[in-house]
Image (cartoon, rainbow, N blue to C red; front, side, top):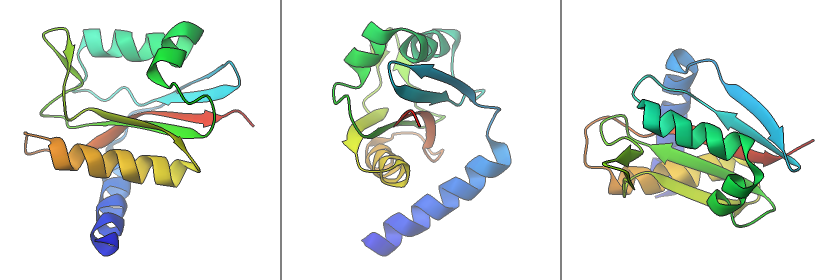
Length: 130
């Protein structure tokens, strides 16, 4: 299982490095929030993600564990929000010990829940500010 997770993380990391859009990075309440504004994200989805990245209250709702690393993964086919409701395969995990673990666990959870064919990608990462 760990080998499959490592292969998935490596494949997704390579694909993301090749295709990832320029990141939007903000620092908010002692956290660095990195948004990857993928082309599949709708205006509504980008608005929600940008609100999380720039509003302390939204960030606190999104990431209840104020410590550690967090990541949100979504499948391009499933999206993040549909008809005003979060999609079940858009998985956010927080309170993790490092960025790599946060990405790997969010991707694995998303992959296990996605309905679409396209592999999940990380759309949002949160790390303690340096």
